[in-house]
Amino acid sequence: MEEKSNTHKERSDSHEVILDLNFVPQWARKPPGESHYSRKEYEPKTERNERRGGRRDDRREDRPRRPRRDSGEDRGERRPRPDPARELPVGVSFLPEQKRLASLVRQIHHSRRAYPLMDLANLLIQDAEGYLVKLEVDKTSDLQLFQCRCCKAVCMSEEAVRQHIMGRHLADFYSEDVIEGEAPSGSFPGVARCRKTGILLGPPNHHSYIEKLTELHQSRFPHLSLDEVKQQVEVVRDEELIEQWREESRRQTMYRSRRDTEAEPLNRRQVELAFARDIEKHYEPVHRAIVPSKVAQQLEDRDLVHTIHQVWIKESRFPLSMSFSMRAAFRHMHLHLFKAGKVNFVTHIKPHPVAPEDTVPNIAEVLMFLKENPGSTRMHVLEVLHPSLDPKSLEAKEALKPLSWLIERGHIIEFFNGTLAIPIGRRRNHGK
Image (tube, rainbow, N blue to C red; front, side):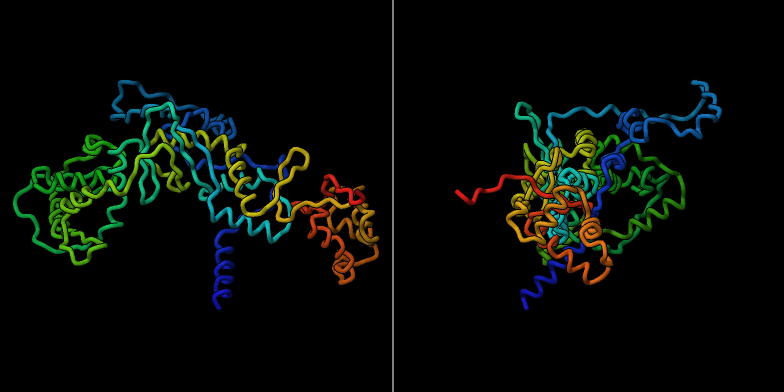
């Protein structure tokens, strides 16, 4: 029963991730899709144009341009452009994600065909969850990275990683309970509100305001400074909003430890202090880190994201580091690599050359035909060697058995597109 359940689990896992192994020819390949690390606020304009095809939409060329407004015209305060992202002394490479890699291996085993290594690597690089990002700090640099143990995110300062853990992972260790209480009493001329989220923080003169502001900073904007968060806050003089804040303040959120369910509930400030005492357990300083792709795409440090983005663009055109990693992984998983021309292929069946004269006549006939007609398909072999047979008949299936036997033994290679070829290699001289 255990063996059957394991088999069923393996089959169900194999259906979780299905990757398309029907590759198109080199000339017909599409350019890389939308970058997983696209951040328009710091991505160079020329690079964005290049991804769009290097030219503007033709339909917009004939449109008259609107006259620019006079610089003195009141247009409101413009947001300053952020400084360009800086280059970091961090090496970036890519590794295959294990579930995606296992899916590839299963499909290669099942098909018994040979696939181009670079195309397999490109398949994972273009998959938003198909790879891991490996970061290595240059040994000559003083830069230190800090990695979260909970989600493997990486930050460039200890303060940033602590804010990340406090904002993203507090709920992993504490559950929330909402308790009804008394509404705040007194007269309040206005209520502070976050412009971006619409969250009410309370009147600036109320004792809970600082606590709410700190909570907003840590939960929603850990990548910004506290002063930058304050700039997003406005004071609104509106009786309805003040009344809404009073009603919201009646509901107080308390926190209970998920590990110690008997412990007393804590308010937000208490739980932050308690969590801060143990927060060092949840991160570590590193010079080398491996980050899941989804986490890497959502890193809060724009310089790190920019560094990864630049390498991803190159890798999506020519996945060199990914192919090297996959080559080692395939060998470990008992797949075989061989070269045909200048292209590296991977297959489940080890190529094993055999001379036609060392085989029986029906086998030799197929070998001789493919030796003279490399690149033929099964259908072509059937049409030439057995022209009178209906391709859908049982006789045709029987006639192709020698070909199937040769493929199973590695004496003939069947490629991903159905073409066939004889492996080239040295034969052992059995006469000596």
